[in-house]
Length: 176
Image: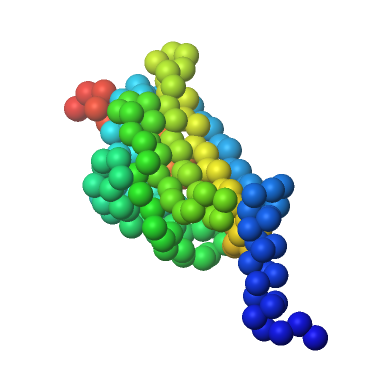
């Protein structure tokens, strides 16, 4: 029979070996949508965390400063009914009118990186790539159903498009 200390030591060695090898797991969510607005208009809405509850069915609460390194409070409402507070999130990258990235964790153990990448598209539209990469040894143990998360991202993309395009239509509609 293996003693408790010996068992823990063997488990620790196994985890270290896995973290340094092919045991590292990854999961990806990749969604995209075209929005009939300029990239800066889309970025402005994505960067306005305070107003997320007005339009965003997935990220129901995001609070924090829009500056690299700033901590964020993030709460999501998944399509499967689970409401999840995401711990230890920080703003990782900001390029106005192009990129907003947040995430956190420990590389090799458990890490997530949530990206909004904007590119000019045809007819003055914006192509939004809304993605997430999870990686690390413990990803396989996390409650991260890719199909559910993908559905949540797609619902958020649709809501963002509707919100922006309705606001754009309201701005260009003459008053009667």
